[in-house]
Length: 243
Image (cartoon, rainbow, N blue to C red; front, side, top):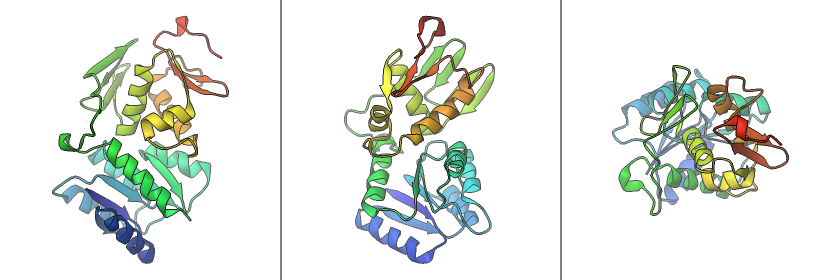
């Protein structure tokens, strides 16, 4: 499987390349945004994952992420950045990032996250892990339709392109309609990582989904918060009791 590392710090990029090649991955390195976009678009076989810095010459990581998402809505993107503010995380997730790690980082954790993302988001049918459950082709509720084949959601006549993780999170909510789901449970079953990882990731993804499916994201009807626990998805707000 092939990884794209977008990092302008040469020593760090070489270290990452060496360690991921030791793990059996093919690694391609880009030192700036234009090179990353060109490598991504011209790749003969799709990249299994992108590791992306945010502070880069000539083009920011945010812009690179948006460009990649225009070209490919499925490839997992893991941001690896020295930026630690919550605004940076939120902006990255809004651009289509799947996971966010800060520098300095622990290498085994990075490798573990990459492995989980790659295994849970295979790029071809031949990569599908045993036991993977195929989602239904489409799902509709209260005038909203989700198409799992095209990664698109239609709400109020507007079509939205979802990332692979946005789609899988929504699919997990749909599969457990009416159930209270804890953040650690969601992390384990959607992201494939343990509950020690920050659950802010889920909150950011829920906010993004609410902006798409809710008439008023501040007063959600479908993706409900359960105080001190997590979230609950309901198709019919009239039948739900908000905690």
